[in-house]
Amino acid sequence: FGYGSALENYIWEWNVNEDQTYDEYYSGYVYNHMKSVLVEKYLFDLYGLEIPEETLAEYKVSVDNMNKSYGSAGSYKMYFGYMAQDYVDYYVKSLEISDLIIKHLYTGENAVDPVTDEERETYYSENYSGYMYIYLDMNNAVKTIEDEDETTYYVGFDSSNTEYKLLITTEDGVTTIENVGRVDGKEMDDDVKIVGFKTYELDEDGVDEKSNLPDLILQSLEAGGDFKTLALRYSDDYYTYFYENGAIVTDPSELVNNDTVADAVRELEVGEYTDKLEISDGKYVYIIKKVELIDKAYELEEYENLFTNFEDNVMYEKYDKLVDNYLDLIVADTEALSKFNMADTFLTKYVDDYRSMMSSLQ
Picture 1 (cartoon, rainbow, N blue to C red):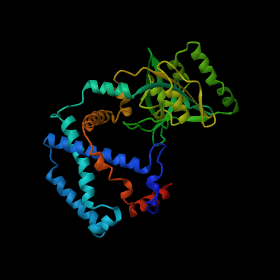
Picture 2 (spheres, rainbow, N blue to C red):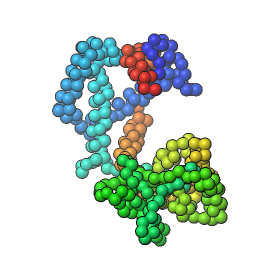
Picture 3 (cartoon, rainbow, N blue to C red):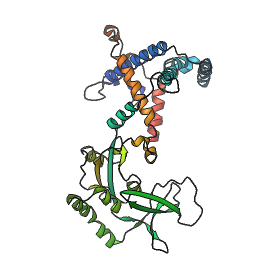
Picture 4 (cartoon, rainbow, N blue to C red):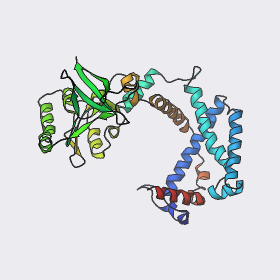
């Protein structure tokens, strides 16, 4: 909806990319969507599924409410270009049909074809990568405090900015982070989640000294230094310690929200590390190493926050592959299809209102 309806006679011939006009792009989209709907209707009937009566009753109420909100069924169509019943029949019901098929195939005790451990592992190995990283805040340092017996604690904070004393120790190659309590001495809740380290601003001498640190780290690595050891010694990021054996992501952009850094990391092979990667005019520096994937990290409690949608993603990919297999079997009537194009549609008042709303949010 980048353009208003006043341009409807022209926009379909404009290029959406180097190879396609808007007409070709959206005609292809509609064609592929029609094939997907056809496959799902076939699967729905094949498995003998039905939309529950109570759900159909809810649809009827929704149609009545949509029509009333615009004055009448005719007014609704004048605004959107289709009937409220069309919206339910061709969109809402298709979502329900997809959901019922997926549940029938993959979920519950009576699932016809549940996701297997092999499919989980394949999805994991094909879509995820592991990275250790060193993050340096060149103008600040991690805040620490000492108690009476000279034990040093890192100062972490939660989403409410409450500060906590973190005892970080490494023994036999395993790092442990123990939250020993609030810095202010008040009682600590049981479900505290640390989101980062507190830092303090370095003075001019401190900034000058830290400016040499990235090169010193790289020199240590080139001399055979252990990346993990250096990361746990120098990194200013809490999650370097929390995910000491590597953060697991589907793309480096999830690790660092910076295109330059993400592009550099994508070029890495396992065992390789980047040069120093500066962002925000050198205020922050990353050094990142690609590491072997941790075995079945999606089953480990410490990594659960990185895999909240993992089971659903595996399941939906499996379903997409099933649908794709049927899509390849569909033979289209190209002569009939050639009689339809997007120029024969029209852009309704909804397009203008949507465009106006989106412009106001920018």
